[in-house]
Length: 356
Image 1 (cartoon, rainbow, N blue to C red):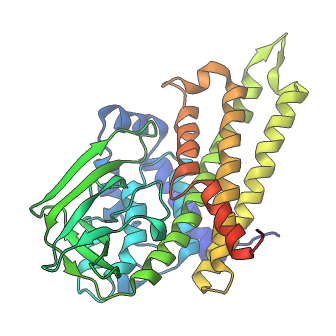
Image 2: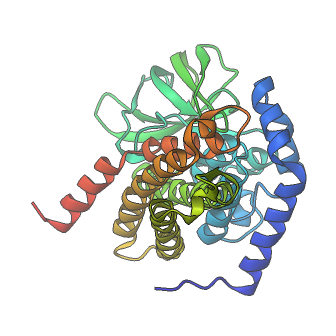
Image 3: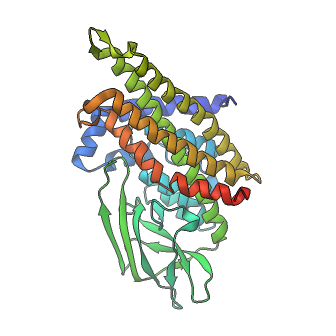
């Protein structure tokens, strides 16, 4: 199918792309990563009003829906721009519904993150222990944006085995946050340990919030893969025109043409399925969870293959720090595992469709 954006969505995507071209060119992004500090971008992203686009106003955002969030994810990936804090915010914000000022603060710079491991599907992540006095204990390794979050939305289970969500401040006693390095420097994770940390109850349907976060994470990570794949395709085509062997551009070789064409087909297929899944999840249709699962499994697996092909087309230069390709290669490889591997999502599809 061919997906067509509305005029407003198309204008938003073009405006964000222009802004990223100005604020986050490759040389600037590389400098952020070399310094190990991406806060300048994250602060500018919030200050210039992009962080809340796609999130309802009642949750502290600027309106719009998952399609707008998909466009944001795609463009951030096309620039290899830091996106962990933004993604953590949009996934956790629905849990703050009804708390005056809490979600608004998240989109104004006081980031909030779901306390689940980045490689886990949110609704399948282990819950932490909730004591009778309301304190929470347990640990979650590799939490997305765990090192920059001001507060955590924590899935917990009480002595009766009931799961709920609690809010824990990152500055509270008993909270230990240990940042971890990733090969993909455009995202960040941290190990978070809670040892009797004070918490507040969140008056939301925990199962619904986590289920929705899972579908949204699946679609948004797939959108990130789409953006990274677009750039890898562009870089590969450009390089194949510049690099010569036997006196001719390598782009004239049939094997190179076939590899580039395969990446192109994957990109165009991903574009339609990602946008469709975003609209489906936003509409909360009966098959929206299946659409999200298929999108995450197929798009991120294909993106990882595209990364390997792009690296092969570039040769060893593609993985050097000085060349831009490695930003997108590492990004696509992380996307394959982020919020659940393709295998995990394919198993969900199989279970839901009663194939086995």
